[in-house]
Length: 96
Image (cartoon, rainbow, N blue to C red; front, side, top):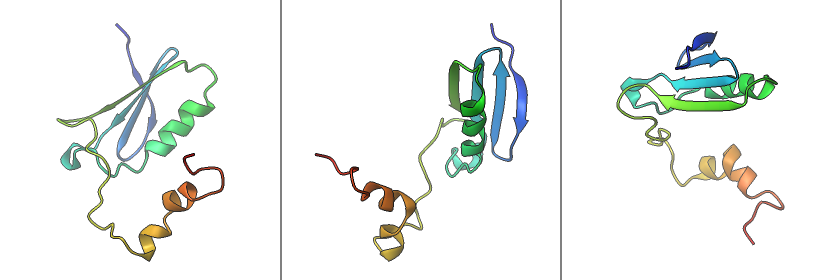
């Protein structure tokens, strides 16, 4: 059994390590782990650690992650100009 120790402190993410294993827990169970903002920071720690070979991602509460909150998203100019929309329209990104 692995014994995980907290390796970094974020608002809505728990980042722990045990040897060469890292564990990221999305820790916003009241929103079913949607809209977790600090997951990118925790992933950057994993990316920059040369000794991490395994990454476990889990969610606190009853839902690992219910997706992203999208009540504010509409088919508007704002959506079409989102970073994801711009990335998907970049040259070489279109499905063939």
